[in-house]
Length: 94
Image 1 (cartoon, rainbow, N blue to C red):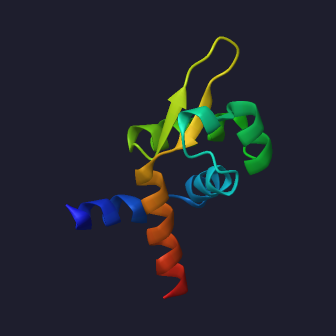
Image 2: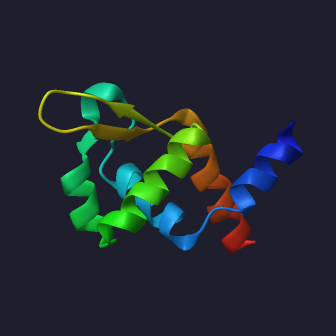
């Protein structure tokens, strides 16, 4: 199972990793610390279409979770997302 997780993490794109990194750098690691889509989009500098694709992929892989509210959805990093960042950082520094 651990190898499967590493394989999934290995398929993440640069945009995916930047997205996860922005959430981590801003301590968006719980629902009450979630960041709105517009704030994250400004920080990662992606087009709206690419942003949506990244969000859908990361939600499907359980690396991020969404918090729906009346005005705008917010996102935060899950423990799987934090683990994915650590695996990629370790891989780069090795």
